[in-house]
Image (cartoon, rainbow, N blue to C red; front, side, top):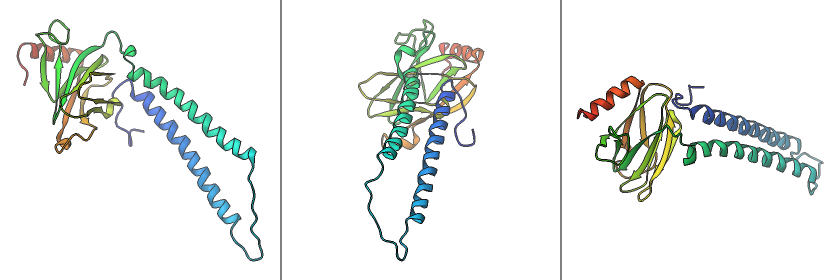
Length: 223
């Protein structure tokens, strides 16, 4: 299925892609049934010489069936999707082992703030990197989003993560990357004339590479 969806790069990708595929199949089946029904009715009840039109009030049984089936389907999809929504969006589901980073959005760049040697965000040994997010694979990360000017949106397609950054609000999103590599962060909210150039990169390292990178930054080697 990777020919039409971005590569799966986080633990969220499997459930999200499955939900997408299920919804696509259900709506596809509904589309075929409706369109076939339209064609059949157009042909079967077309105007013909000597045939007089008549009126009907319909079938209560048929109306109940075609109302109940979509209603039950929507409720089931809603319950399942809400389960994943809570896991992804509810702060209570952020793993206790998650490393917290600050991600500040402004026209037109991303500023990533890392905790220093004390491992705590918001202290004097924090350091900031512009337009680069470095994380190790298989380690949960919580990004604490803020915005300086207008609404921006933190979006990494491979991680299936998208969360708005709103001025005056601090919003936390979390993810756990599952494969090493380089991915793109895009702003998914129109934020001004320079919106098109508000891009950053995610570098997913092995744990050893990430430890070495953090040590380099702590030593003053940030580019």
